[in-house]
Amino acid sequence: MTSSPSAAPWTVGQLPPQNGRTVIITGANSGIGLETARAFAQAGAHVIMAVRDVARARPTAAQLPGSTELRPLDLADLASVRAFAASVEPVDILINNAGVANVPLGRTADGFETHFGTNHLGHFALTNLLLPRITDRVITIASNAHKSAALDLTDPNWERRSYRSSAAYGQSKLANLLFTLELQGRLTAAGSDVRALAAHPGAATTGLNRHLGPAMKAVAAIAGRLVMQSGIDGAQPTLFAAVRDLPGASYVGPDGRGGQRGRPTLVSRSATAQDTGLAAELWDLSERLTATSFPLG
Image 1 (cartoon, rainbow, N blue to C red):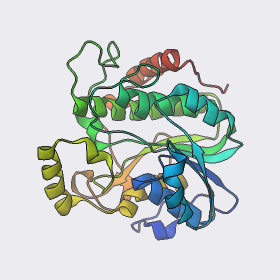
Image 2 (cartoon, one colour; image 1 turned 45 degrees about the vertical axis):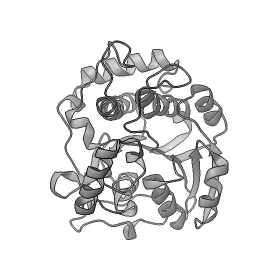
Image 3 (cartoon, one colour; image 1 turned 90 degrees about the horizontal axis):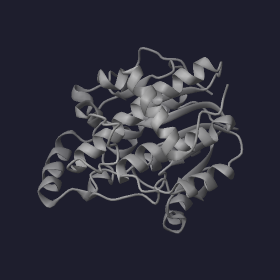
């Protein structure tokens, strides 16, 4: 069930009843994902919490209201992605929420750079594998970090470039937006009613900064006291994108200064994130790397 835009600022309290609907949320055991799961379960949806460590997530899931279930999913392992996708029945909404940020140079089980492999390729493969069973929309979580990022399709896995964790994270978030753009184009061409949208939480209190060094953690802590909003406030753009009647490829974020906090609204993205040619090239590369493809049409 969706609701139409209105002039009044939107809050999670306006989430319409979701009875009879099923929502998959990756990384639903903490941060924005957990608050999104809580809101959907409270509204009556059945929430599939796709998490890397089911045992660790079980105590948290047990405290949620409504109908929830835990299923294992490691986005850094395409075998796990395939196994998860094969276990899923028809679903209304897929929320590609899980991610890593600012981690040291590492490789996924399939040899991809950790940010690119987890944040982009894992969700790319998951979406394509699930798409024939998705009835409503796909929401992918991006970040303001995309605005200063570049995407090097000749070296997406940082095999030749000098590695910088912040640049690798930004590249993966830019890839999330380009993926959403190309996915919507393909859905439209296939005559599908499914919509692809993206959202970002602004500056919210999540666990994504845990890999920063001591100095940057101190800076983040000071900045956090000034601009960061709560997890539930950070989840509002995701929820807004998931239930409002928005055009495909819309991008939702907070309406405050710099997109750091505030009520959810449609926001702008960088010129690179609107590059349809680059989006198509990224899609082709992602298909080759994941051995998955657009399944409709």
